[in-house]
Amino acid sequence: MSQARVSQIERGEIHNLETMRTYAAALGARITVSIEYGDRTIGAA
Image (cartoon, rainbow, N blue to C red):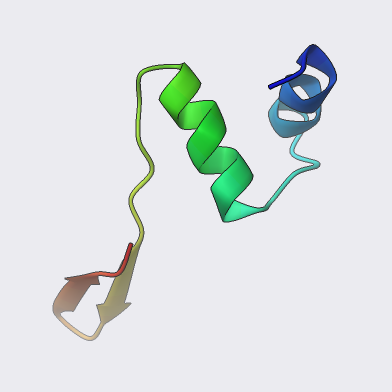
């Protein structure tokens, strides 16, 4: 991932989930997505 892309992510200009997952993986992290409906929470991705 280029420095320019990292800069765009950090400025909030990139919202693509796969790009964000790549960025998180480079940091040793991961992104999780959940759906909340009433009192239920379901992991979605």
